[in-house]
Image (cartoon, rainbow over all chains, first blue to last red; front, side, top):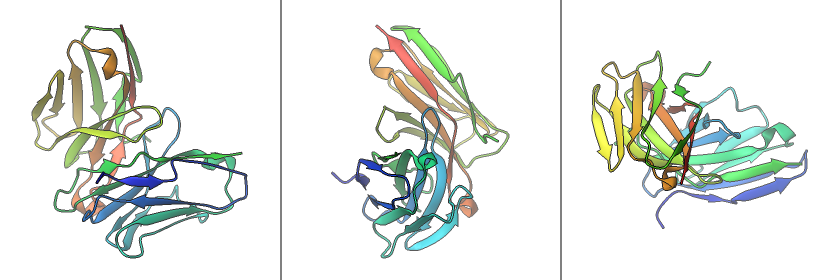
Length: 114
Length: 113
């Protein structure tokens, strides 16, 4: 399978704990995006990388959120001191800059904070 | 403020009926994508439209991009229960905006047999 892969698929954590999600994009895709989706809503942009550089962060991304893409391949999204409001589906997508706009999504990580 | 407005939010129809979903904005997009998403899964890309006025067909699905590249529609002919899902439109801003996709809130389609 050469699609976008996200791990874990599901995560249940207690409020106040830290969690980390991983995304493996389609190989050779140089753009990687993180989105958050709550029930009944479309995905909301969080941040994106071009290769290893983080080029934009949404105001939705509070100081408790950090994302990295150290070698321009896989990416991690960490949430510190989780809150119940962080419960959502976290989606990763990748694209090839030459193609510009077609983004392909992973299956997402469903986070539940109890 | 929602950059992309989708309508209707929810649609429940009988198998065999036709339907149209709309995606509107006051902003111009370099391209527009339509995705279909099933519960618990990530969105799956259906089509990308780039040129104003462009029409693309994918079996029973017809996608149109507005002349001014501000709006789009998805028309499904003879809907099937397998078409049930959340349909999302997403507009891509220009390269200077990172080709970042902004999404509408989605249209939940339920096709009853």
